[in-house]
Image 1 (tube, rainbow, N blue to C red):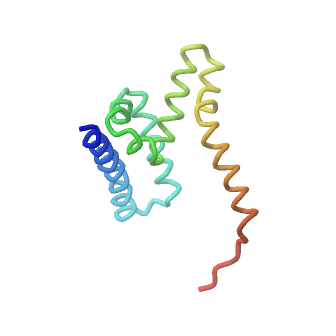
Image 2 (image 1 turned 45 degrees about the horizontal axis):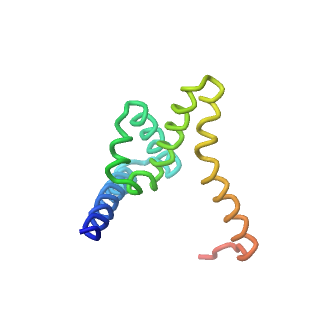
Image 3 (image 1 turned 90 degrees about the vertical axis):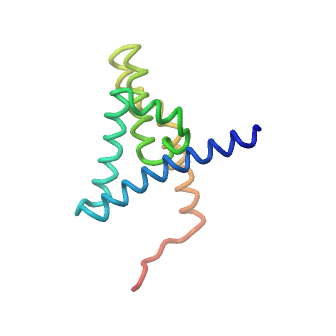
Length: 125
């Protein structure tokens, strides 16, 4: 029975994460927006949904399916700001930094390590 519950969690995460990615693909295919603008659009959308209290139930339902895509980063920043705001204005400004510090630090460290291991070169067509 436990295995079925784990598989159900995987299915929910895959369905929600896949839906987020499918929406992004539709936006890519049918608009002239650059990839950077699409990333910002998705991140800000998650911030707005979090502020309205709509993204938290999605995270509770889908877990990593809602927190791994770029929308998860927006959710992380917004929830950090909201938790910090409970303590005061300064914490509201630093809350997103505290919430995202581990992920950003890991990205910087691993990027540096990969830069030491591999050599970049220009791709010739």
